[in-house]
Image (spheres, rainbow, N blue to C red):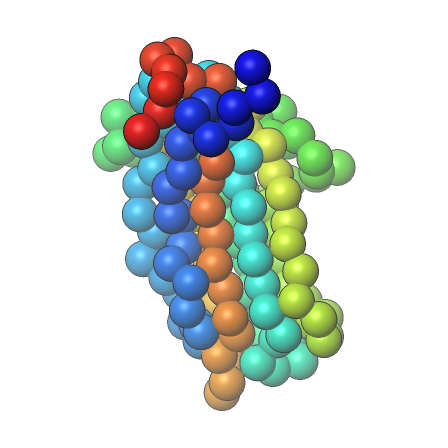
Amino acid sequence: MRDLHHNLGFAVAIPAAVYDADNTPAAVDLLGFDSAVIEISVGVGGITFTGTNKVEFKLTHSDDDSTYSAVTVDDVIGLASVGTGGIIKSLIAAHAAADITKVGYIGNKRYLKLLADFGGTHAAGTPIAASVIKGNAASRPVA
């Protein structure tokens, strides 16, 4: 069967908006799914990003939705490395075009949180959104 619609679940990790400061990360529950992909969409940068004026996307995970720890390179696929604190994407240079980043989560924790961590000065905001696509549902069809 080629029905992808009934086999995936979706959750908002970062609501679509123009941000100039950290978001409040929402917990994404992976219960009932055996795989996940984090999709990060970033519009044209509101500033010229630098090593000081930057945005770092930090992914953390938890067994109990209480104590979170940073993911490591062993918890994700599609990345050569993960920065300190679970950094899976950094905006540290000019960002003149919109893009999408895809990161597979292969860790074994139940909950995920994604933080857009703003460093430095951001006089103008940057359009950001992120979703978690949950796959390999234990019970189908997924509503």
